[in-house]
Image 1 (tube, helix red, strand yellow):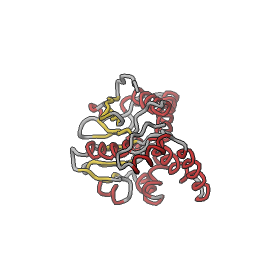
Image 2 (image 1 turned 90 degrees about the vertical axis):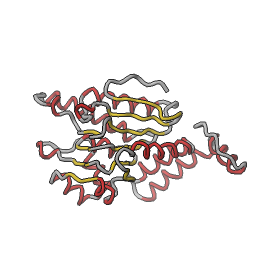
Image 3 (image 1 turned 180 degrees about the vertical axis):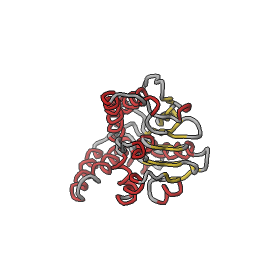
Image 4 (image 1 turned 60 degrees about the horizontal axis):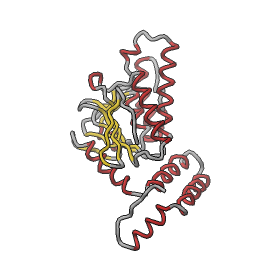
Length: 265
C-alpha cells in the first residue's frame, strides 16, 4: 500500500509483507510532539482501514539511545491548558488506533522508553528490547500521570501491585527486570533488537493473514470479558475463517507437502 512521506516517521518495507516504522526525531530522543502524534494517528488509521496493509509492523526508534523519551516537554513548556488538552486528545486517538489495529505490531525497543514512549510500546502486541534499554512511567514527578493507557497496559503486563509501585514511585527499571516481570517477550543484545523483531515479524507474515488477525482479535477482546464470552468470541472468529480461500489453501498445501501461498482472502 502507498503511505505518505511523514516528517517524524520513517517507513520502509523490510520485505513484501513487513513494514518497519521508525520514530524519527533522534535529536530529542524521539520525543512525541504534536506532529508525531498526528502522524502516528494517521499511520495506524490508514493501516487499520486498508485491505492492502502489510501483514506485520515493527515499530522502533531512530538512533541507539532511545526508543522514545515520551511527550516533548520543550514543546509543551508554556502551553495553555486548552492547547495541552487538544494535543493530548491527538495522543489518545493515536493510542486507541494502535490498540485497535487488526494487524500485529511488534515494538523493537532499541533504547530507553519513558512516559509516552513506554505507553506506545505497551500498546503494541508484544515487545522485544535491547539489553541496554530502560523503562519508566515517571509522570507523577511532573505533577501529571500516565494518560495514554499506561495505568492500564502496564498493570496488565506486570500486575496491579507492581504497576502501582512503578508509577506512584516514578521508578525506572531495566530490561532484565522487564523480562523477568513479563513485560518483554525477548531480550536482545545491543544492536540486534531490530533484526530479532524482524525475524519474528517474518514468521508471522508467513502465516495466514486472516487467521493471524482473527486470532489477535480473539485474544485482545476475549481477555476483556469472562471466559465463556471469550470462548464465544473465539468460536465466532474461527468460523469466519472456515470459508476463506486461505483456509482451503492451507489444508491443500499441508497435504501436498509444500509451503502455502496465502492471499488474505
